[in-house]
Length: 250
Length: 274
Image (tube, rainbow over all chains, first blue to last red; front, side, top):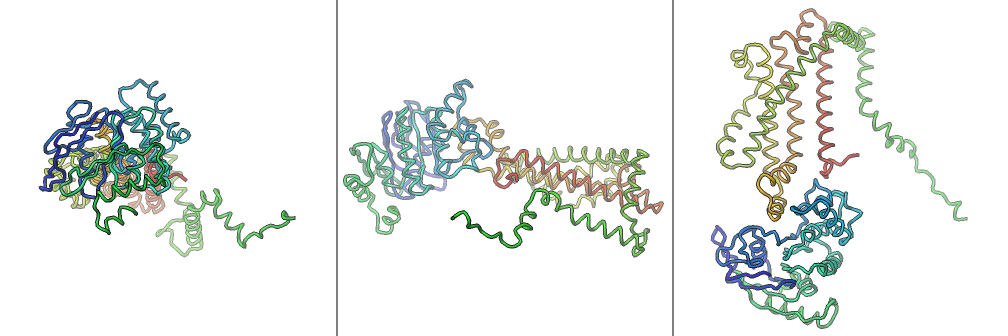
């Protein structure tokens, strides 16, 4: 479980990025934070990950105060961030400490098969395509069996088709262990395909503006009329000027 | 009937295939040197160049064989190689450690970098008179000069390698709770390795250069001594042979550096084999 209480962040140069963020995410829930660039959504994710400290307020993971990266929390970035000198297998095992070698191999093999990269286990990152590299990053995160997985615009560097495929793929793998997913994105469709709840951040400093519980049945169809209605509602909530709106939809 | 259709071979295809072949690729780099040596041999043989100026390649080879037979050759090579290795080990380690310190800790960079940069800009060979005053003309003088020569390229490249580690990878390490020494061993050092090896390769070149100069000053053994000694007796063939020896040893050192790169940097996109 994740609890965020009255979190605010002011950078050293005086810029205030976030203010009064209160949020609770239940175990196994999938929540998206959407907002335009500069609303502090990535900053919030970094604070939850323990990579950056809140100026005020507190973050609790499984009722423990977060002051540094928590072992039950894993993170997927926009870039795969694989160690270029390690093979796919070694990269997946990178965060897997305190596990017996036997268990380590069993879990690695399982997750590699799950992301469809078992035959690339000994390949080096430079031999992978962008989508494959991001699947390795997903495998590396999930192999530790985190209770919370944070995703910072995980698919935004990929082309539209691979992005859709990986969104479905992520949901499929998620169903194995059902960790809590907290996703930062500016892709409203992505938020709608994945999430139980969508939270709109707005303003500078960023605050929670509106929250939507998405009641669309799963699996969700991107072309469905209700889906498109939801998209419209969230776009309206973001209150974008025309140019911004075009940029978000693109 | 569709089988009868075949594409004509483009003109010159067999030549192109030969140019891409493995045996051509292996032999091609040696074509120019072999040609030059042939021309050289002919020029001397027809008397267009005096043997006092440049002996024929054959007599250079003969001089080499004689030196090898008498055992002199191996003695001098051993002495020179020892100086090179000792100087490289001392200077390289100091440069590496300084590069690590200054690349990792900003306090140490603030304290030391300016001094290192000032020293770096002194041509180390300009210190020869001073070095002779300090150490005389013994082994220490040569090893000292080689050390100073190799120190800076290794320092700069180690420093640069550490400073340009991808911060995203470091952050990944922090996400997985790596301790500082683990971050260093598992992320910083492997990331800096390509740059460090560039420094090693550059330093190997400077190592030979320094040694050549240092050995010709005043000496009683080593390849440089062999050359200077031969000069006094007008043995041009031995002088040329010594120079060739430096070229060969330099090439050997470079090949070792390349082999290390190929071995250690298989993962790096710029060092793909083949």
